[in-house]
Length: 403
Image (tube, rainbow, N blue to C red; front, side, top):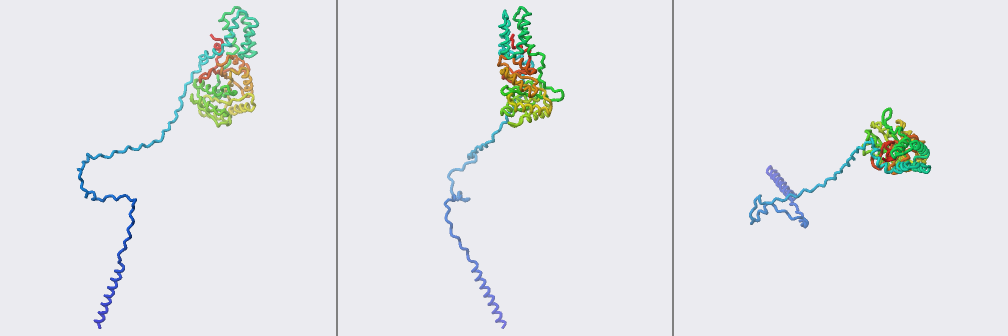
């Protein structure tokens, strides 16, 4: 019985082993290889494997390392550097010509244009017989030179009396006589100093006014040069906001001598620019503030009222020390009409006569002083930067009558 049971167990074990082999063989089938892919015609040729070149015998001798030419180094590609922006150098500051005696140095230029007055009078006075016709010619000469009617009559009366008393007349005596009378007419004792030193504190404030075309902005720039030449520091106020180039022009004049320029927007309020100029002048400790106002026709009431506003606004900071009226000497009697209207709006304290070298009408000095009761303080004798000179009556008269 035990033998039968043992045989059954062995049979079961053998069958289990055979079943496991069959199942295992079914599970371990070899993988099916994928079909070959078509060749890539665009692929580069395969590089030779290591050792393939060794199979090819080398017939040529090997070169030493000294014989091998090294590949030339390619020139480095130039890298374009960004352009260097050069800063514009500031223009050099000019040293203006000293003002002392400037009119004397310009005497030759002045005398060439004034011969019609001085030389004409001397020629008439040198006649042997001074009859009524001659005195009328003398009067006409003075009137043509814009001396003015009243001043002409006074001068002729004094000349007639002195010539009658003098009797004989040599050229030297006549010249001395005429020089004395012209000096008296011009007024040698008038104070012609441009007041730029206020009694209390600084800066001195100067406002420049005038009609269009008199050279007002240029005169302001030249006046800055006169002041700098005398050792003064200057701030310029470009209160002419109506003319586009006025502020640029004034700033250029200032940069030449190192003067600071205060300007506002084009078409802005002139009074505001003038106010700011005085304010900055105080902050910078400048000696003088020059305010260039817009040129205006003396017949335009609105523009003249605006000029009065500029004056009032400036005086909120400090009183004006000078109000200079720029007149064109070639305008003659029309300049007197202009002067009269400006004097009604602002208190004119001094006159600047421009273009005096281009006219034989030097008598305007006399008539404008009499009209306004204020002195001619500066005269313009040309287009040069230093052709604005303090007015000196003696030098002026000497230029009128010549040597």
